[in-house]
Image (cartoon, rainbow over all chains, first blue to last red; front, side, top):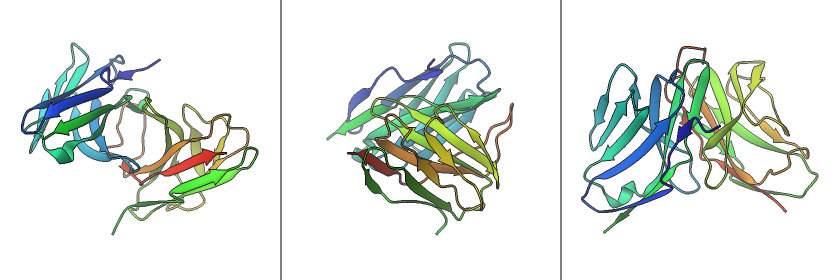
Length: 111
Length: 118
């Protein structure tokens, strides 16, 4: 039972444009959400998080939006840069659940 | 520099052999975790430990064993009972322990160990 889903395995965006990565969850007890970035053969690195008391959190070029009624969160990267090419994982925790990860979305930024 | 060190980075094993992956952290974190990553899948939790000499099974613990004799160290043994051991293994730690209704904050990950069974 996949509690956190990233339905797009891959996304291709032109350099300088906005990248939007999406994540859906099913467990209404989740109240803390994170995004991680992962390069090949490396461990994931933390990008940004949001708690359920907020609907938006911003850190430089990265903004995470949370829509609790739709059980949906998204990560916006603007402007997109070549170094943003990586796999992005969303993760959620809350209630009786420790951190649960989505399947990941491979983002490719084209020059 | 503070961080998590995993070794070896690449490991090959014959079927029927046990192998141990090392994970050391100098972040003074209480909690440590082992995840497995397979292509097209998210990170799946194998085992976690919130305190020395205590550890709990995650979602896919069968065929694995761990120990936590020191705060800094959380080695993972992949036993011959693990049916599909070829994978990328990630160790992580968090400052806060997990409890129902709380969150651990961000997890810090090591660089991973790729295990291939021949």
